[in-house]
Every structure is written in structure tokens, then in C-alpha cells.
Length: 484
Ligand code: NAI
Ligand code: MG
Image (cartoon, rainbow, N blue to C red; front, side, top):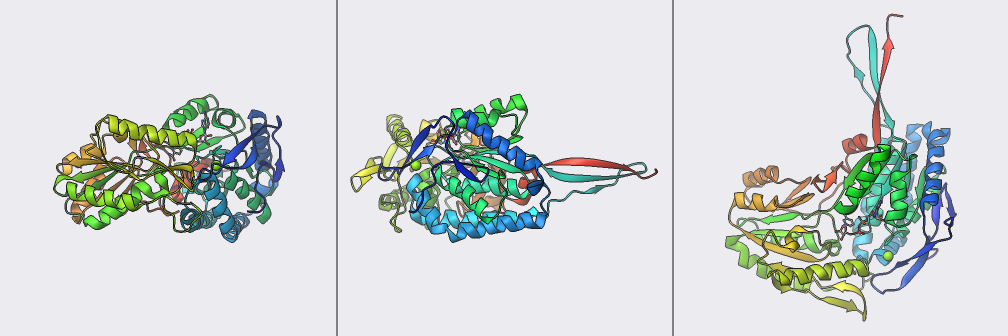
């Protein structure tokens, strides 16, 4: 890897934090420190916000011809594509996810995302409204101003793209606070944006910790909106702290998504799909299908096949292109996951695969693909988001029982349904309280299709045209008298 980005990116320039503070970002597969990164605190975040405000009020960005804005976003997509190998390696080093995922899934989707929203940049338009009286009334779709984006560590570049691309397409300026565990690719994103011609201050990146840098961004009066992805717990804090300045808030939070396997499903695909559903991304996925509900007639068969598949999901060096199960992002997260495995055993669930901490080449934060069967809905491993490669299999009796169990959670992010009965599939899809439902598939995403939560999985949608308009623009109604 060439130059590793390690400072704050403000107004298209690198700078140190005012207090000179830095923090280490670590490769969780080796335990080695990748680099020390400048740590933004409130004063640094404020400097980034001021730079974004200045960019927003200046002419260069605000009055930029929308076709040119589209072109810049497209060029940024090209730059990301041209640097995909480097960015994927950086992401894998920082996060521990398999290079296969970073390079073959994350990066292409990030590029697609910027291209999709590039297409939107010159199509943000208002309406003419038929009002009473001698008046002409029309609406303008205007940007909010400065959008604060706070992202987690599981899909660092993808989740930044999900928010940064539409926010910029709609004409906003952005201050991005990446997760402290994985700040590197976000910094490169800022640098690449400058390289392709984004004016200074339009995209700023300030790595730092949640309670300091993140909280400062949420409280700063110069920020108009917060787009957050992370834990439900922190989502509550963000909403509370944003209240003082009445910021527009959107929250994409945790999940405990059900993957419902009916007895009439094509069992082999269901096993495969449920396996990707929980083990992709080491299970550190907000939409992970962490509760697998299986109809009784095929329950034993499913458990046996699923556990067999899990045992073959061996961990490996994330940089090895064959590796499909990488390293848990941090020591802290590793402890959390192991804690849940202990809780599952203690509560009487039947451990049928994995359940152990392991290493690769004698080091790193790895956990074997873990499967609990005979899980009961009230157990902690069926209620709380684990964010690790741990599946909880729960039996059910019939459609009503499946729906009731699927909805027996505070979360509502996603769900999977496996059946060959088309009518049943759509009936159940309508009954499950979740923002996304996958039928006979799992983990499908597209820049054009909205993604976000019901219930305590949050509100607001990422991706998709309308979600972006709702989230990153405001409507101005303009009245014109026609009789004078
Ligand atoms: P987190 O919610 O603390 O971190 C997400 C982001 O929020 C990070 O950028 C962090 O710095 C920031 N943040 C933290 N406290 C903040 C505050 N007071 N004000 C503003 N920003 C703040 O997530 P954490 O602690 O890293 O992970 C804990 C658990 O959260 C995971 O085990 C998982 O269950 C869940 N999680 C869910 C994610 C999702 O995609 N829905 C992503 C990350 C974590
Ligand atoms: Mg790291």
C-alpha cells in the first residue's frame, strides 16, 4: 500500500488535529497497527463544518450548473473504480473483511452508487401547483445545506457512499465522520473527490470517536441534518442530541432479521441463502439474517445441512482471495460476540457448529461460524443484535406462528422468506414488519432500491431516488401574483 491517509481532510487539504491528538487503527486479522490517524475533536469538527458552510454559501458549489455536478459525481465514480484494488486492500486491512468482499462486492457497488446518484444530480426538480386565485405557484427542491454523515465500521466505504453520493447530488455539502475502527477509505474518498474537481469544503472527512467528534457534529449549529448508520443505542443518543438545534435526522440502525424457511422451500437454496444471510461480512451486517425460523417438517434436515455448511466455512487470511470468513473488526467486538456465544449456551440453546475463538497464522480476532439450534424467541441470542457470525435457529409450526415469531423483535430492518408457494410468499412479505423483504434470496441491494428500517431499526431510507429527495432536500413553495 502506498500512502496511507492519516490526517483530517478539511477544505481539500490534509491537516492535523488542533490538539495534536491521534489514535491507532488496527488490522484485526493481524493485530498490527496500520497507522496513527489524526483524531478530530469538537474544535476540528467545527472547522470542518465551517468549511462546509463556506462552500455551501459560496458560488462555486451552490451555483454550479447541475450537469457539471453530475459530471463530478461520475468522475468520482471513475476515480473510485480506477483505485478499486487499493481501496479494497485498505478496507480489508482496516476492517478484516475478506478481500473478495471488498473488491468484488463493496467497491463495484460504491462505484455504481456514485453513478446512480450522478444521474440524479441534474434531475432534482420541483412542480407547478394549481392553486386558487390569480396566482402562479411552484415548488423548488433545495438542498438542506450541510449534512453531517456518521458511519459505522462494517461497510466503511459503502455506507459512506450511500449517504455522501445522494447528499452531494442534491447540492448539499458534507462533513463525514467515519467510525474510529475503520477511518481509512473515507479519507481516501475525500482526497479522490478533490482530485476530480470537487470545490474545497464540499466533502470533509473528520475521523474521531463517537462521544467527542460524532457528538460535536450532531450538536454543531452549522449542521442542518444528520444521516447516521450505527447501533440503535447510539441512534437514540443522536436523536436526543440533535433536538437542541432541530436537525433533520435519519437513522439506519440495528437489526435481528428473520430468515423464514417454509417446509415447501427448495431446501438446498434455503440452506445456502440462510448461510450467506448470516455469515457474509462475518455477520457484522445490519441486515444479517441472524434468526433463522424453520418450519417443523424440515427442521431437523435443515439444521443438519446448515450446520454442515457452517463447519465448512473456515476462517482465513482476509487478503487471501479464497477466504470467505474474515476477522472480527476489533477486540471489543470479539468479546461481545464471544459473550453472546456464552449466553446462548447458558440459556440452553443447542450449539451445533462453531462457537470458538480462533486465529489465522497464530493471530487475529477470528470466530468460527457458529450455529445454535432449538433457540427460543425470548433468549438473548434471539433478541439482541450480536453482529458476528452467530446464527440462531428457531422452529415454527405454521404461517401464523412464523409471522408472529418473525415480528417478535424490537427491530424491523430486513427479512427473508423461502417457499415455492408464490401466494404465501407475498402474504408473508406483507405481514412481516421490515423495511426490506427478500423472497428466495437474501442480501440483494441496488442503488435504485430503498433500504432502511421499520420499528427500532430506524427511519429514513438510503438508496433510491425518492429516499434521497426526501432525505437531502427541502421544498420551497413560491407564489407569484398574476394580476399585477
Ligand atoms: P456505534 O453505534 O457506537 O458506532 C457507529 C458510529 O457512531 C461510529 O462512527 C461512532 O463513532 C459513532 N458514535 C458513537 N457514539 C456516538 C455519539 N454519542 N454521537 C455521535 N456519534 C456516535 O456502534 P459500535 O459501538 O461500534 O458497535 C456496537 C454495536 O452496534 C454492534 O455490535 C452492532 O450490534 C451495532 N452496530 C450496528 C450497525 C449497523 O449497521 N446497523 C453498525 C455498527 C454497529
Ligand atoms: Mg481498523
